[in-house]
Length: 338
DNA sequence: GATCCACAGGAAGGGTTGGGGG
DNA sequence: CCCCCAACCCTTCCTGTGGATC
Image (cartoon, rainbow, N blue to C red; front, side, top):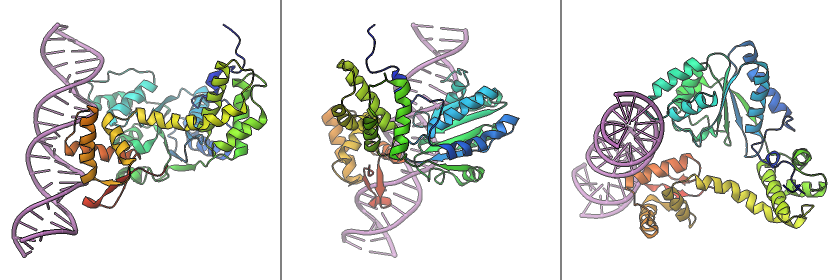
């Protein structure tokens, strides 16, 4: 295979890559380590709630800290995305999978999975629940805590825990709240420089270009890394020896739509149609439902019953993809501000 | 004031799905 | 291959709410 001119290691340029050195998150890192330190003496850690805008390092530092702990103790660890696993059953299943135990998914009662989890989570145990506001059955938090697991809960919204059942909330009252704010341009530049060192061939990207990406990404490391990897791949495809600045400008919309695309791909056809309709402006149920039916028959998608439509709306609202104002029959749905 | 209407949302039940066992 | 099991999704049926209409 021909030697790459731009990319040395593409993995380093993705948000999934967890660097061994976390930059510009010192206070959050030390708060989290303090909360989790009881694990080292086989005691129950303090639960943590990490909140802040997307791309500010919440998931990265959670996985990083878990990795550090694993080097010192036999930690049971699982990272669960509540967007994908939002029921009690699927969370228990994912947790066991994170421990390396492949339970039978279908056909196993939730209580049996819980029993299995209780048995297998003995000793130091840490569960990261990402996008916790997507969770549909909050009792699972109670179950996990009861089994002795330490929790790191992550959300973009500061109020994610307020919306939970008061009983669960009181169990979470001693939770350590750790806030993440957007990176400054300079901090983002440092992060990108660090990744450039391992991910790109020397000389492929200039300091000025890093500054430009940082400026355009508005403090969001996910967008910044998205821009960097898209630009690098395009330049590589073209057989160039350096990333041209013109390419960087054109990657911003792609990097942003890339994260939006992932969300849209996870939607059902019905949910996608509802969002498309709401792009045309806010609507009440009385107007939205007939529009949905009409659009479904036009697109050859099965029509749904009114009650199912309301359940779908409930879910879209909970997922933050649709917002509403007004109560009762005067409720009006719209798309949230980006 | 009684009734109607439009909508929200709970409860129950049936269909589908996917993995295991006979 | 077929049946069983349990989760999960959708539908049906129902109750509650509050403004509009008679």
